[in-house]
Length: 531
Image (cartoon, rainbow, N blue to C red; front, side, top):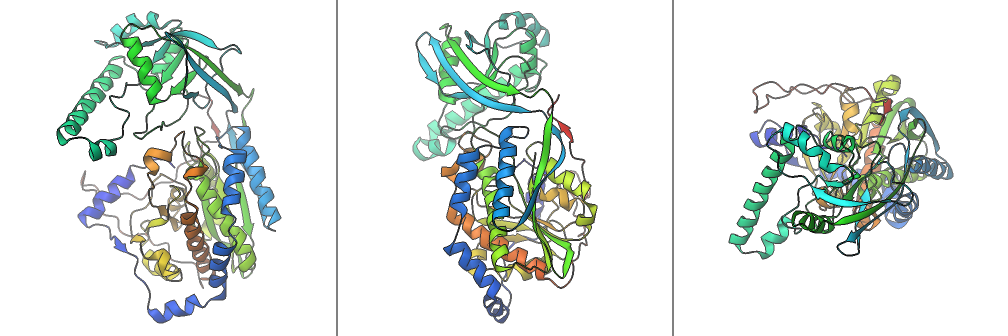
């Protein structure tokens, strides 16, 4: 799941009244009653509640395979696992290559403070980090001073030679803001926020004065002979750091938990001259490895060349196990396919599931799919995408399609009221320009809908963090989403004709006074990670 600035624009437009935002409205009671008696719908609900395989799928994927970083053996292992699962259910499935990525495999990371005392530290190497020698690297840890300008930074750079350099701000508190708000006095809370904001601004200026960015600063330190890069990308919650990618080519880049990072920082700032030993094992492939999507389908009978697409990216960052981003979306769609194969084995239209690769690096798998399969895109009835966490679906936007209220409202009316009663819908809504894989289809005028979940503290605690693990999955909520998605897929498949793709007239952006443009399709990265 990637951040998308258009979400903020959509919120602004909703507040201004330019985009409708209403609780889901039920269809007439008679229509509801008729659909509740539909044997396919009854069987979907029965199988999802009485014969759920979610916990087993989650365990096998998240605990057994683990994280699924693009370019790693685990990504291929996950794809093979999914294909075997589908074939065991009698569903055709295959891995479809679309490009290449830098190959890398994570190994053991062990970080210890060896001076002024002995302490094992909580941390790990970043994705694609270079390895250390087998016996590790031991060196002093230093901080960066304040610089008057980039020339002063260049003069300081020789001090980095042979040292581990800390490039993140030392957080003033390891307690998240909600904890302060609950227990601190109002005066203490305001004081903390003021000091934190001042420190953030001072640190921003300190880094800016180097003339470097978050991407280029580690490279400059590496060229100066640093022993390694030490950072702490705190996610504003207890015990959580976000784990992304290294930019160094020869020296290790490690992320250390806030508590240990702060200790090292204070020791360095106060003349303690702390030393750490880092052992970071990893393997870089000698040449790029394939990138791919994992595709499965239940062939349609009456209209086999028309499609309903279930969408969930398969890849993840690898600080945790990719449980809620996007393991939950993955097992949700697998469970939907398993159930539909049993209760709706001969759908009117072909039901296809796309487990996309390299979403985290720019929606590459789904972008490649829409580029490579215009014949499918042309005849896709609808796409249902799930990505943002373990929670019950709480929001559905019409994605800017003028008549989405009609057909989505009709399909949603078949879903049990206890599932839809708290879903907020916005019609016609704003077209998704990024953020997740539905946007790849929206840009091609395909009605593609993001099934957006309740938070469950997703942004702080699991999104791209070291704590995105199986224990954070709320399986009852995922089961609810299975029922919702399976019924939506069934209803979309049974729809007599392809639904309208007519765009709504987009509003004026209140920020700049210009009319909002429909998102443009962007090309997939077919060779990535090499820079």
